[in-house]
Length: 214
Image 1 (spheres, rainbow, N blue to C red):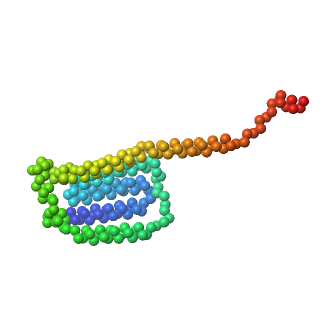
Image 2 (cartoon, rainbow, N blue to C red):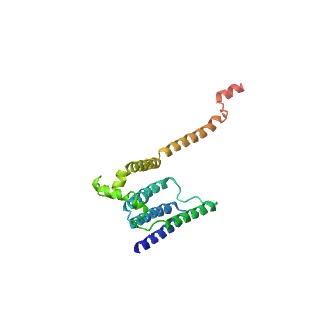
Image 3 (cartoon, rainbow, N blue to C red):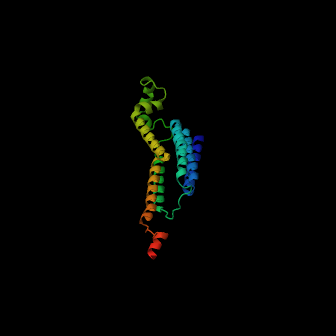
């Protein structure tokens, strides 16, 4: 009962943070509240005994992502550009998708049910072979590093590539090229009127004026 109360409280906190993110126009506040959202999600995973997922969510969602977003704030305005258009169709779609998810959750087995189909498929084999066949005491490590090792390797490569791309953008490699191109364009535009400017008549010297009078 206590676990259920904690889950309901954390879910209500997630909804409150999401509403605050949508309503605010300050990007710095959005970043901070997004980190709080990830941290609250990690607390929910801990309460559900999924410590490995909670650790990943806290490290990536509340840690690395928040730092990268704060670094990106150096290149963007502090306030969100106000929008005059309100897309009600998008809101209807979001509420409809949320209602379908709630209906799907109601059809799930009870939390911790040992006779649930997901626990009767391959989980007994993992529990039986983790220590005897693979000599790994942690079953979660067995699943991630052995049974689905190629999948984990692919996920690691994807995350590494995404992080590398973000670091390249924050390092200013593309921004520097764009600034240089803009500077060249501006220099060409400023030099063009000087080239087309008509030449003014040079003042005649005193010798030329005397020769003209003579």
